[in-house]
Image 1 (tube, one colour):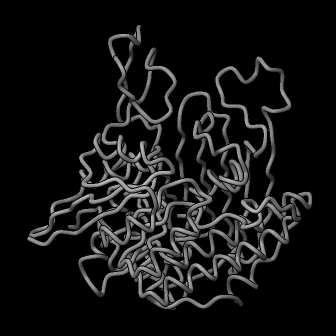
Image 2 (cartoon, one colour; image 1 turned 135 degrees about the vertical axis):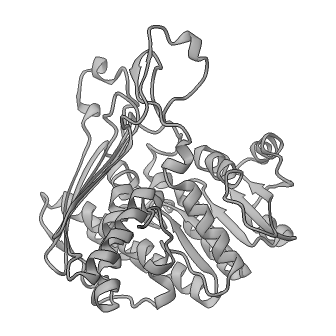
Image 3 (spheres, one colour; image 1 turned 180 degrees about the vertical axis):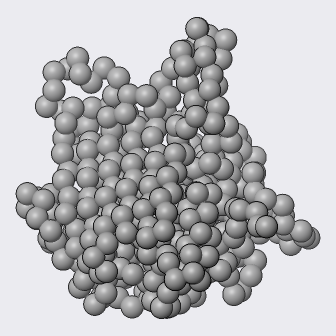
Length: 423
């Protein structure tokens, strides 16, 4: 029996679903998973979390945890401002697989208390990410950029269909559209730019952006062995609720310092389009939707909500503390429950990829360094565009003409797995 040691950085919402997801992992013969360490900004939080989830040990710093546990997989799911520093520490420590939650880094000027225009923030953020990814390469670590939308069963299905279509002379992705929204994160760091790095554009629109970038990468790799990259970006980042009467914010967390609505339009180098929206204005719980139009079909993914299950409760009391779907404010009335939400949201597929990468030397993350890089380039250019009245911003200096990526840092469609049966 081989034991893989897992470390978790962060004890909030992301830390919680990460630990629970490892408990839902598909069975792998001869493999045992031990969540061996957890670290938090406060030692008492780490100790409480470890006791609740039966984690072997709690630590007061990330570095101490790495030295003591020597994990096979380090899950960095803490506040955004620590993502870059913790990834650097993991890479230097030679952790085999680093699972990095979004965003990969935030502008380094935020924690330093500096001000700068959006163009400068973009340049400095990409330079910082270069340092982080260079360290990952130097340490021979495998970086899994944990964009759960990439790991939806529906996205795996689209990849299967694209693979078949290209054998028939089709398989061109023409237009993609996606939404991620709820009524506002309750994480204390979210409305603090120095800790979150941004608002709805940076932390919600990034989710549907992930599969939009991924599917164009896959399309190019299947057709010519080279991913199709973003070329230019137009965006809006707005504060809506902040400017409304106090009564308008009754059912939301009103953001004072970050945007609560973000819209990004991406034009790829082949002149195809993706549009993604993230906002904190969903009064009815989380919304995760994605749609793809190709030269042979349209594929719509309605992850949450969808009409697979329907429940009517005249009174919410009998449901107790059950969360029928993420961020649903009340169980009363008609709702569309989402059983096995962690699987539906891609977390189980994502962590299964991380475990496979730890087990097999020739296995690399489907969502890897290329995904982290292009996501960051698009998001930072999006804020630059928003400051310039939605003008298109060229990103080719970072994408097609910028950093070069190895095959192991890109998707491997033939290893992504299948969700459909065959004749």
